[in-house]
Length: 626
Image (cartoon, rainbow, N blue to C red; front, side, top):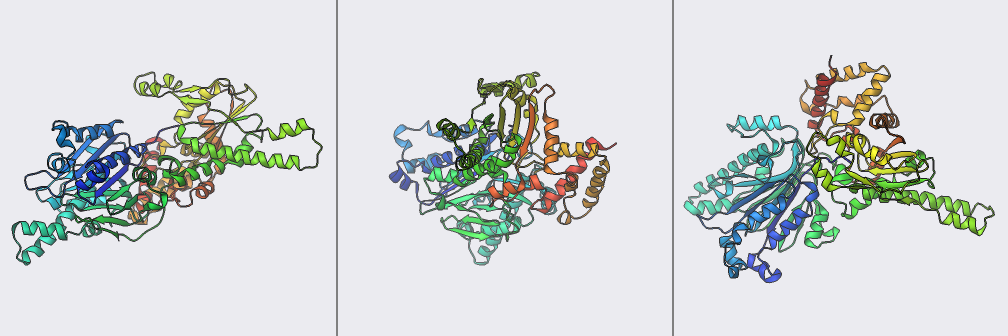
């Protein structure tokens, strides 16, 4: 119910044939651009704050531009950047526009290498200067670098000081810019390495340039720039001389997928986007390995390198629960299982009264978990029917009909009004108007009789629940409202790309603090603060997460009950209960994505432990210190 700002989306394409080839086979030289547009649109869910694209021509002559970029902000950024990229085409003669050779000479985005990016801020920063791809210009083609990614680096300070120690002066203190400068610096060194070889061999002029572009090895750049990075990342890069690469972090936090044939090499953040754009089966698409880099040189030769040995395998579970598109076959099944796994908890909450319970979902992203939840209820109901009919009791035909006709009641109880949501983003009456963001479906609930079970992907702050959703649902006059979260309680900040980096974001944390106060355990808060301070004196690679102590005295059910108390509006007439997924249920549904630090506090990288200790110290000194 609360939109989260989260990981970005990447798309990268390398055409392995001349543009004429695609004109003859597919009817257009713009085959690469069209695929990039499709890939970005099919990953629109991953970034609605901005978008950018870049293109490199391999055969530009001196004096001709060979590297182009367009960026835009806002929810319509994809259309805007592609309109800008195609703008120069409109002024050319109609009979020339479709000619591949003419296009290559005259249109900036008629090339062989393409990169696209969709941005959601993982840090809350906004503005065009933060929209990818980032571009580092140089008169040497091989030293030009465009970089984009889905990442958040936890040890930006270390990387920044490393750059400064080499005499550099980064213009912006942000992980993306610093990553660009770090890799750009190593790219410069790689070019200089080959340059010295050429001088020793007696080469001169353009022979040196051509040899550098043939011999440059991006693996050297990655091996000397990435080992010091702590965080979750997938980043993509293209150089002005035609090198293309993408790399995944060694913990496997962020994911990326790829496909290659003799015509094209393509990378994307999501498998389903690749399947759709390239008309592929799931087994045709390959997931990148942790620590792996895929590198394609200017000749179109692809190779895989393990740049950093795998350190763990903890892909982000939130990508499966919430962020990725649900049309991926595996994600669809996983989200359904997340709903199905909650069967017993929900049945207890409704006292096993399916006759007087209606099931629904808010928001639409929870629809797949809803289907699984309903299937779980149907399994229970079918088991009950079988036991009744095989119990040996004597039933009349009417009794039998009543038994077999029982079903799980499903309704669409609320619909989101998109126009209203857009309007209320400004103005001092936001909370009052927020109560009308959803329009309820009247007549779906038997007043004072029915329970209403509503499933959501996750509950973070709970603000929207308390300020609008619960009161909206209460208008239907249910006897009891059960709000179900298909994810476990979100207890800890994220530092790998999702914009929730502070403890005051989480209602579960506030619930735990309230329980500590109520039960006379305030001293544990103070002890945790002191433990965090001591931990922060250590090198970050040796730190552990001290904040897990805050939750230790309580069961998940106790915290869930307290969350319900905190979120219940004072004028709510219905009873309220919150049901959360268990960690075991999460792992059961998503066995290949065990990165659960939001819920467990077990961070995959040392930098996560350092930052969570800092976050608790900040919270304590801001809100609790007296």
